[in-house]
Length: 514
Figure (cartoon, rainbow, N blue to C red):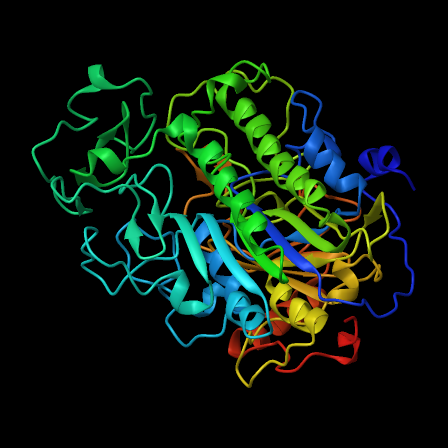
């Protein structure tokens, strides 16, 4: 089945083939985008915005139609991705403020530490949002623990998000470009430094908030949290993508003598959406569409660098998103008004923050020319939680007891060999949901049904929900009353998963790829 058929049927058959042993460990580049929805890219059916580089990546490997982030928001998804543990098992993995202490503690096994321990040079570039330091962090001194204490050799970070202070980059253990005579102060409780705030001085803003985001003003944009000082270190929003892409490609160039792992977490297409002027107006959809074009450019920079250095053939590139899409997420950037017929979640219901599939079913594609068939489409059920155990299997790295407790070796799925993938997937938003085969169960949940700020259907319901996804991909018809036995069985399985880890401590026999 070709891609055109997939786009019309949301199906497709994944090709299988037997792979022999690779002569050397592949380089691994994991590009983790922000808030990109199932329907936002050309290779997933988008027509209003062009994504030629992402389409090129998809055409060079396998495109997944049923891949899932573990959560419908960013911090939990990133925690799960790097640790192989469901974030909902912990109470402190909600969306973090910008001054939160390090969520992943030194000594904890991570995707980076596993690969580093098996001969890889490891680098993190881009959005972090997993906390830094021990709490009450002095941003003018040494910033640790952080990525370097959990397996990364180098890091160049946005500490939290583009809409949260501090609006500076952190390189390894220090704020990049900081003038010691202009120290940074950060607070999430009270204003600092007497600087004007967005809520009091809208006349100073070039981008007005739609909800929240009305505190410290940086570059004419008001943010979440309060900040003073650090003027020389503050980023320029329009240059963030250029800066991060340059750091990502420099890491590749400097690491080519050995196998490397790059975790490249783009800022796009998170708010505030202020793409570089060369992308303005390119999409016809306003800043959100232009930010998608900028994201595509960033991916192209990475792919072109791999080509130029002769590394593409033995580099596994995986692209995905931390959660589903959101249109208005706090700024009046005309994203809603200029959306037109573009559907960020494609045929799915909900989006970021939602229990419906629009919250966690995301674009994912894998390219490894030496091993993965080109132009393949996989309907296999896949989850980001399994990247840890799967990459351990790929590289032959053993997992210790308790490492990646919820991660399963799904390497054959990620390489396009297995059509079935996981037996089930757990999704996390306000409540938990379970996908098992053709069925999706959402446990009873409390709270509002629609996020009034973002206009997102959250999927909360005091009654259980059951959907048959092959016939109802939009989750419109709740079948729980018609199939009470299936509801009970899936609820029982979900309860069992809640009670303890579900992963394997050791790679399965599919580990002999290198």
